[in-house]
Every structure is written in C-alpha cells, then in structure tokens.
Length: 127
Image 1 (tube, rainbow, N blue to C red):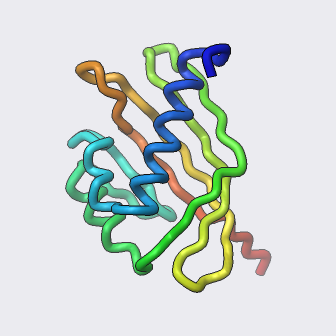
Image 2 (cartoon, helix red, strand yellow):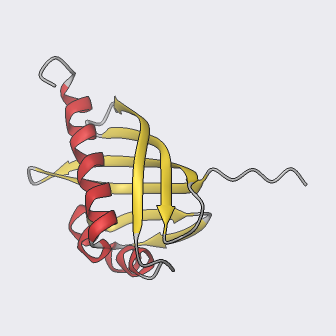
Image 3 (cartoon, rainbow, N blue to C red):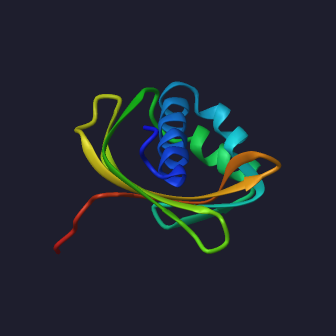
C-alpha cells in the first residue's frame, strides 16, 4: 500500500473500518461522524451524529455483510478526501443487492471523520 497516494491509503483504510463496524456493531459508527455530519440514506436526510447513528442502528435487519467491488478516492482542494464505494450486501435472508456509497472525509484534530455520507441500493425500476 506504500506506493499508493496518501489519500487512497486513508480512504481505503476508512472504507475497511466503516464496513467492519457496520457489519458487526452499527452502534459504534458514531465515532466516525461529527455533529455537523450529514447522511442521505435512500433519499432520506439525517443531520448530526445522534440522528445518523439512530437511523443506522434502526435498520430492519439483524445481520448484514458487505462485499466491496470497487472503491475510488480523490483529494479535494480543501484537503478532504472524497470516496466512492460500489459493492454488494446481504441482509438476513434477503437476496444479495448492489449498493453505492459516497463518503466525504475531513481531518479534524488529527482524526479522519465522515462529514457527508450518501447511500443508495442499486435498484432499477423501469416501470
């Protein structure tokens, strides 16, 4: 990993950490958000660490597993990192579904936090 740009190393580490927490104990995700963070989950808006953790903790499944297909990371002009993740997830006994997720990461007090998070299932309705 040493030959990758630093923003890719940080972004990849964040993505691995995020999905590990999500898949094992969603209540611990509060550590990566701040009170100014925003989450858009399937079009629903949530602002603030408490509201985000409440939403993620209340999702209607007991077990979930994410599999990352691809991830891309870019540095932003204001020293943040923009990350896009494409993958699949399996919740309880539901069929495997594709998903897309975007994170904006910011370094605050020597810790990388997620200020913006957008999630969508890869569902296509052609009706």
